[in-house]
Image (tube, rainbow, N blue to C red; front, side, top):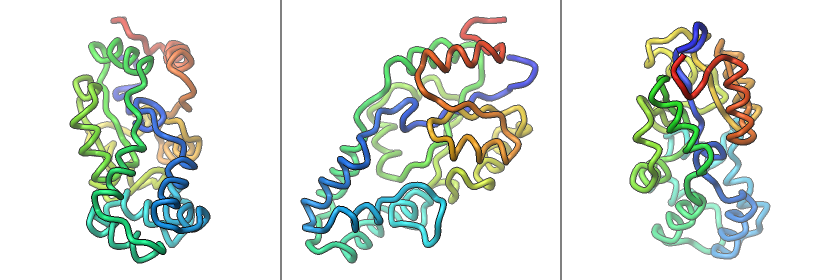
Length: 214
């Protein structure tokens, strides 16, 4: 470990998990439900920056479970979707693991405490646990729908740091969204914006965090 970081906390989507562009999912749901893409985009907004929260944001914060999300979507679209059809589209957003980041994680894990903190939903969380390999490298895992709060809300970072028994300034968030990086820093965490596995490795090395023992 370094003198300043006790936990490396990875985001999932866009960092360890490749996710379909939001426009792709919106277009598919719009076609299936005969609903304008602009209406679907409002339902699927995932920024947690304005209230009332979208249906997707309520799903990710745990306010809606899978059945509740399905019912709320069907109340808002022109042609109802079956539960299985909607959940299939939700799962189709997850394209697979990002090999370069997974390889870096595998090198870091023997020498550092690793966690994840993801804005996700119950369906994605279950699917990721069943199909992806990176779990073997994680010491702890946190999901927004289980915490009841999502990034960039300060409360989520406080809950995660408390669960890790770690001072906020000794937690390092690695996230591809600047809004979440900024939120982590406001909560007293250290944070890095993720662009690529190579860039992350260079950023970590500059902080004296390496994939080999000190």
